[in-house]
Length: 373
Image (tube, rainbow, N blue to C red; front, side, top):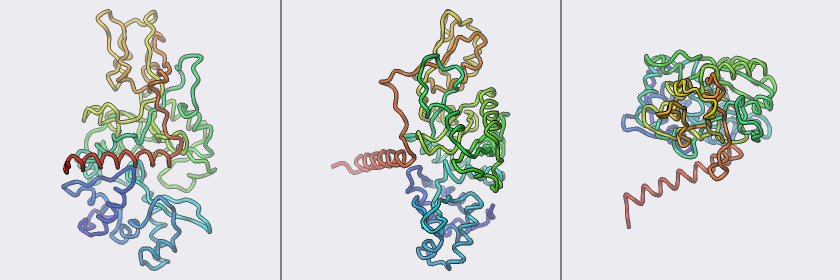
């Protein structure tokens, strides 16, 4: 990680911050300017200047050199260094290798789990509380919940995008890295006892993670083990809010996850897009033991005065964790009423379009309130 002594007042950091904030995922500015300190701890001023010319459309190093006015060899070396440190992304372009911008969250922040220290963790916490938690919960969310498959009601069609196993089977490479959220929270003196190394990454390319320092390569069987261990710990599977282009599966808790923390800390009821299922209690089988109540992080289950579990469907995110902790098999996941289903966008590009439209509409609304006719 670059030195925290980089001067965050350098104009290159504001330039990069503005470029990141132009993305659908956003990188909101704060009155304290803490977001610039975050960038200064990750990028040198020269790197920030170069990265500010990156877009979601990949460009090769020669094009980047021309745009930024940097020597081609120097531009190539800096881009490779940024890529190796997980700060930018890449894809194949005509004639070779192209580089593109990566959002802060979900993006290059998650790739810093092996590098951050307590100073950086404190900066992130300040940024989260000042501004980031608001953008993480905007609609459509960046994340969506995938239900546990084991206890979905028999006879219910489970669509591919609702199954974590679909993405594991579709992948050609599997990997795991430390959960940045748990690492960050422990560094600021908070956190939990859940497993740290369970943030899963997937790729359609064989051997994709074998030379990536911050990712541990897994076999498909080992990837399933990570998934099932997370379920046993009561962690919620979340992934990108699209049906395709899924490259990760997070295993989240409300005590550390930036998205789910907003439920407890800021009262947000929709930090992630809910799955297509809700928990249902069989009154005949429920013994009123309260196990499900204890394991629901979202307070969607309560015991009635008659001593039976009852699910508030508007609060149930559809994760299915409660069904794994019912000793009497009284809980199943049932499909939502079709009228209440909202399938995720098909591709990441479609999600970005929908998010951008929603963002611009909100900005127009705010401007109209400030400047009424």
